[in-house]
Image 1 (cartoon, rainbow, N blue to C red):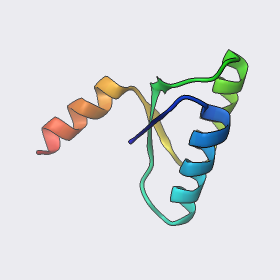
Image 2: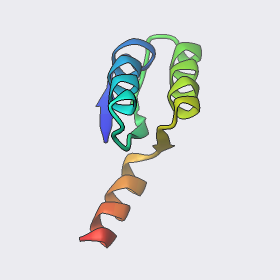
Image 3: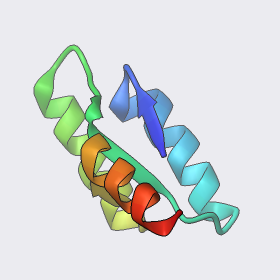
Amino acid sequence: MTCCARTFRLASAAMLGALAAEYRVHVASDAVGSRVEANRQVGLARMERAGALVSTAAAALLVAALAA
């Protein structure tokens, strides 16, 4: 699970690297951002196309709690 202030650069680079290393990647869409909303959307879409699961922080916490 990742949260980051700059979706289209920092989070995208970290997530793409993790996906390349064959990790399962979950991105909390409500915990990432950008100064420009269009850049945020492009970053999320790019990560999703690459194989990341895009959801929300609350959804990720619920899944983690149910798995415990």
